[in-house]
Amino acid sequence: MRAVARQRLIDSRLTPNTISLTGFALNLGAAGLIVAELFVLGAIAFAVGSAMDALDGRYSRMSGKGTHFGAFLDSTLDRVEEGVVLAAVGAVFAANGDAVAVAATIIAVLGSLMVSYTRARAEALGLECKVGLAQRPPRVVILGIGIFFAAGAGLGDFSLLAPAIYALAVLTSVTALQRVLHVRTKLREAGGV
Image (cartoon, rainbow, N blue to C red; front, side, top):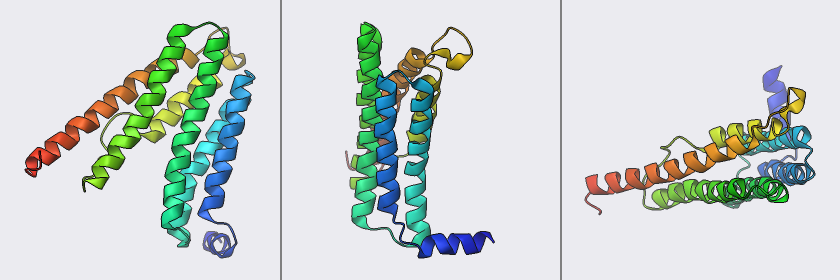
C-alpha cells in the first residue's frame, strides 16, 4: 500500500522545487503571523514550512526529479526563510523596546548564516563539515518552541521567545567557530594550511 502511494507521488507532477517554494510561502506566512503576535499560528506555519524544507531534498532523491538548480534553490530558500522568521522575531522585540533581544536576534541571524557559509566553503575545499551543535534541525526546534511559547501559549504568563533567541545566538556562534576550527584542523592534516 505504501509503495503504491509512494509511486503515485513520484509519478505525479509534484516537483522538489514546488515543495521548496511551498515551504518558503509558509515561512513568509509565519513571519507575518509573528509580527502580528499570533505566535501559536506562527509557530505552526514555521513548523510546517520547515518540515517542507526537510521533505524537498528527500523527495528529490526518492523521485529522481532533483536538479542542480533545485538543490541551489532549496539551500538558498532555507537561508532566506530562517532570516525572514528571525527578522520578524526581531521586529517584535523592537516594537516592545527590548534592545538586548534585538541585538541577540541579529547575532542569531549572523550565526545561522555563518553556520551554513562555513559548511559551504568547507565543501568547496573538498571537506565535509557537518560538525557543531546548531545545525538546522536543532535551530528549527529551538526557534519553533520559542515562537510557540512566546506568550505562554495559554499555559501561563511566561515567554520562551527571548531565551530561545539567546540560546540561538550562542549556539550558532559556537557552531560557526567549531566549523572554522574543524576546517583548519582538516587542512593542517592534509598539509593545506
